[in-house]
Length: 527
Image (tube, rainbow, N blue to C red):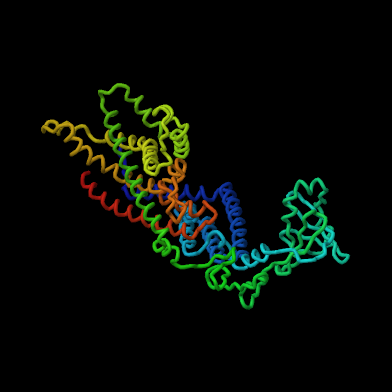
């Protein structure tokens, strides 16, 4: 008779743990793994050093410190023996910080500034730009012989002044010509000057590091003339004086040189404005009206998009789940085809089909009638909801089909024995059980449609335009498309106000998500 010995559960667990630790040590200390680790960390460290120096050059001390600390932590974690969980968590954590935390934090920072058109740099750059943009030729000034040199797309100006050859580019002021520095440059001939006339005439070479001293410019590539600014920059008094009108512009703390009558010199510079963007969003009548109108439509659009796609998807799921229906597989495949169609491409296709003059819908379905599907405010809203329903119902169909098939048939059979009809079985048994699985997806779908930029912009671009609005918004714009227009569309781009709107959207969606997920806990009691 043979006897077997049985290990205690704790001893078996300890043995498995020791085996796993041995494999982990072997995998982490192999020569190939060690060399690969050193190579990857070397690339990471080199990139980090470059990023730190770049941040220091731009006076971004915080970014330099954070980058250095993260790089140090990564090196410590991956070179130290053990700490296996940290080795797996570090990559995900870094990506989270870079692509989520940093983006949200930077958006919040911009929301408290006046960053935008005319205010996208610092004060020194604004002074330089003003002095260069207002330059005029010095009256009765004598020209100096000049030649235009080219090195690919880069142009340089070579002049002879007081018997000395000087040269410079748009980036560097005039300096004595060094043959070594001119290597690679070739002089442009007459034909080349004509071909690149616009580049030649726009070339501006500063006379010195001080922009107030002016610059040299040429119109024919043969003679250069001195240009000086009509503005005088008084650094001590912090003023700009227009010599042609005598107007004095001062720094009044609004991010631009401002005259006594309120006139400003552009460009200005970016400054911290506190809660001014948020205050302007709710206090400026033109902006407030647009914001309220767009917010109301955003909620309506998101709610109706979820409701219509859910009920249509649920209806089709119930119909195609019936065993008595023939060709169910074919119908199911046809029903999910719109889901395989990219949303932005679907919006473009439907925009063509709903065209007022030559669209398929008007020409083929309505006999050539000119129905303004995309130019009438109410029809445009209906069109947006229709197209989003076409794109969204397959997802709900798939979700509801899976949820219905997971409900045991025994519950329906038991209800039939108790005398319940099909409608009562669905309303009292299947629908509550269905919502247990689907409710979180409905919430996420609402949040998705709350920011559904693709359908809105590809179909109507937010139009038709609301003429009474103080912002560039239209009847079908939702909050996210309004933010895009404020930030990137039009001559005046207000990144600060757009960031403030983004923060508002983030807060609203977060509140809706928290409240909705708390409410769905009541459905969990049905499990």
